[in-house]
Length: 267
Image (cartoon, rainbow, N blue to C red; front, side, top):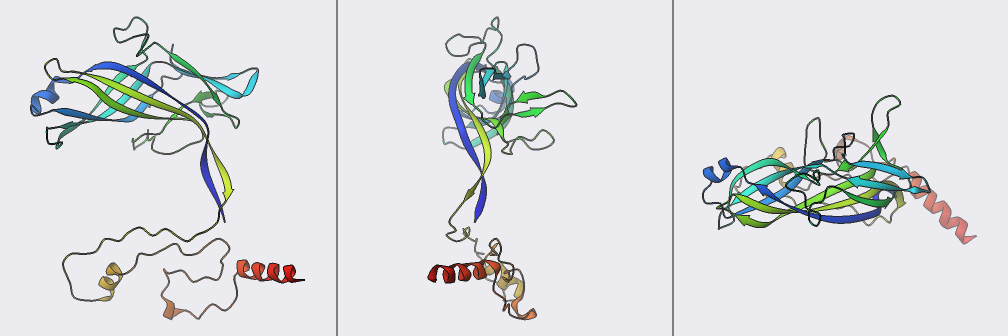
């Protein structure tokens, strides 16, 4: 059988770090906070803005692109934890990485104004824009739903991010947040696979016993499976009640082709 899968053709990672002021209201409402856990849910790369990020094709290397990162608006989801690692509150906030040179958060070693890298992108980029406007973009794979959702894998240049609180000062209400960015060129490629059976997830079992009935038997029985493989035209799926239909007697095209191949090999 065949499968279309996303393949990473090139990738690289960078680390950034900057100090972030914790909203005062969060600490006031949760005085037992001892730690903060962060998740990067979205990044706006400021593409199309002045001095923002951009992606360019290299004239003498048509299969490569040059990515310049600047003015990254990073959106975090923060969990405030007590000393027993219990979640006290959850809050979202935004911070700017790779800022302008005159920004107080700009540091040539840990948070410069821009970073430039080259990536191998033989099948091209993803674009946005209308009519003749085609602007290369970077797709962030995150955790945002709605009209601006970013939780779908797409072709072209993709990015994922991880964050960690490096230092945490409750008295000053500040924390140093390290940010790891992974840039990748991803394309969907078709592969031929050996089928070794379907994966069935474990099924939950009810705790309290109940009187038996057809619905309860189904609920307590096996999970339904997508049991039909490609080209098995005459296989009865498990979603059809067996007693309502005659048995399938015709072989599937796959079985018929396999039998014919075996006979040809015997000649």
